[in-house]
Image (cartoon, rainbow, N blue to C red; front, side, top):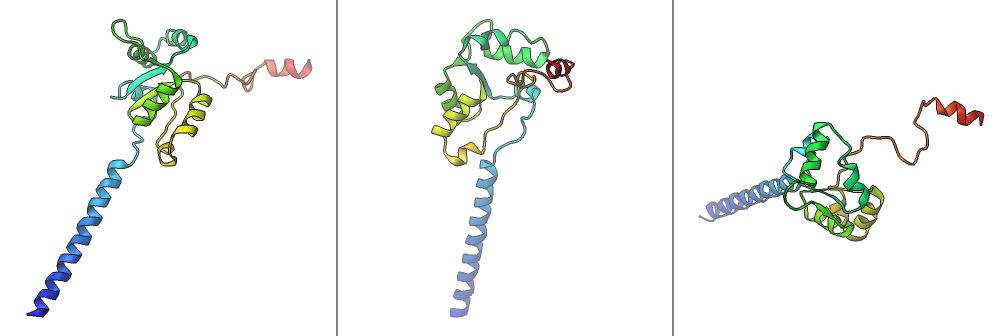
Length: 154
């Protein structure tokens, strides 16, 4: 009689441990960051909210591009009708923290604000996608440029 109760208790404990491990595995999978958005095309057609920093040059830059991905992002951020998606830096970074939000800005001030406000685990979920697709603006001359020889001689 007691042997049956002990076996039932062992079986019940083993099933509870298995159920706890299974539930923990599901929670980990749900909280794992997604790497499904890696390009501008994927970003433009995702369900994320897209916005930009409210500075003068962002209003100008978005209208310069003519390819379909940049144009679709421009139409989402600055629609012909409706509210424009321009935010101040602090508000934009806070929306990034809340999730499913893409924010176009200069990287350094955003990361400075992220360092001040985000937890370490939240920082791991951030991703960057280059919108401008250009060389670093702080480098005066592109690599293998013909101007390098002129600068070397001067």
